[in-house]
Image 1: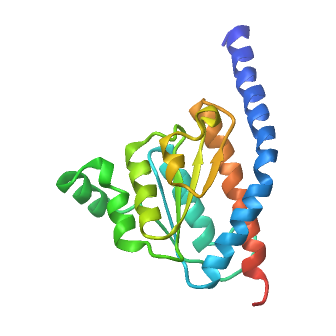
Image 2: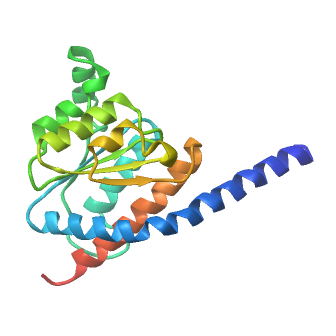
Length: 197
């Protein structure tokens, strides 16, 4: 590895730190979302989450934190990742289209009082846009984790009541910040879920 290669890796670290620092501006909004999400969970709501590729992993990560736990022993919370059933996703992709793979599931499952959480670094993934639209049509609370703040979160933001647009256009940096945001949200929910009700 050359000195130039090492310095380019350091540049990635510096870029990461800048993006992560910008997340401070989103913390108050995470708390607002956390309160609303806890309120819906307290009334029997379910969280449905989805995304593509690395964003699918983030959606599954959030669901794991809710059903399992984040940092505290507490009751399990109802959540479903919509990218994890290959029979359902390939059926919809084959019989309809890949664009419908999340919307069809949201239409079948989500109701008023539920929460639909989407992850897309670009804000433009057609199946994520369609999934959020279906969530809004179902009367669920819709949440978008994305990048592209200059573009207002992309087309997906039109269908989200809460938009967390990370200050970067680089996919890796956006995903790194999304993990921090979902951990902050998990911390907020954990504190609520462990308290006596």
